[in-house]
Amino acid sequence: MPGYGPSCLFCGSVPAVRATVRGHQGMVVLMRFLKVRATFCRRCGTAMHRKMVSDSLVQGWWSPTSMLLNPLTLLVNLYQRWKISRLAEPVPGAPGTPADPGRPIFLRATALGLLIPVVLIGCGWLLVRDDPEYAEVGDCVHTNGQVFYPDVSVVDCGSAEADYEVVGRFDNTTETGRCDAYPRTVAAFREKRGSTRYVLCLGRNDTT
Image (tube, rainbow, N blue to C red; front, side, top):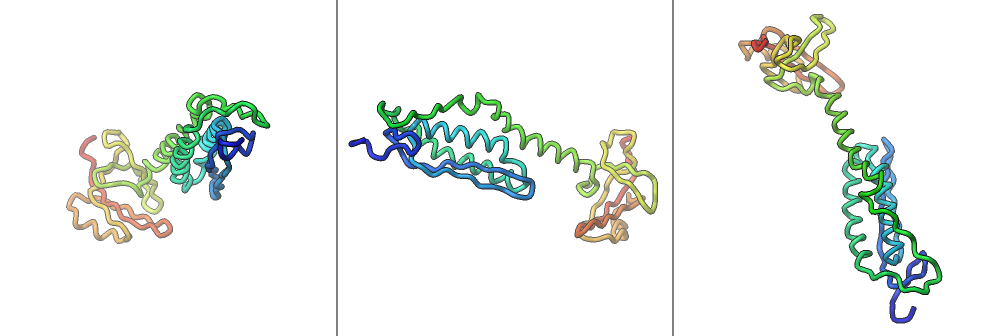
């Protein structure tokens, strides 16, 4: 339309602006980077932004790297959304009908996708909190009492299962003799798992 500049690629409305709306999908070990680069009117651009962001809120967290890249994608989209929102409403008389933007993002069920990274991080924490690999000095552990195949887990020091307190720790070694540096040591636990090696020096738990 003369005097209005470029028209919307999807409906032909004016005014319009060129923008790039992005999305992200995490697929455990793979990722997909999505984008729509076009000239949008206010309504078509808003509809596209809301759809791409809503999909990313659900699909964009499902790989370790995606946990970092998906928030960046959402942030980049904010500037594009700002460009689109500055446009006036489409002028009547376009060849097509502008898209219905639909409900705002935070009023859609997909907004609950913001809780996905919180749940995933929480589940990860539950999985590793009992692992002796992450035990620090001052933590307490429970053992199954076996010498050759001990099963060691981190427990609360006030628990009846708290057999020992970690009084020393050495990484990148399996030499239990290093625990001689800690007079409170009555036992030692060593672990070699892949490239991970460490020794825990264990003393009696005096809190139970």
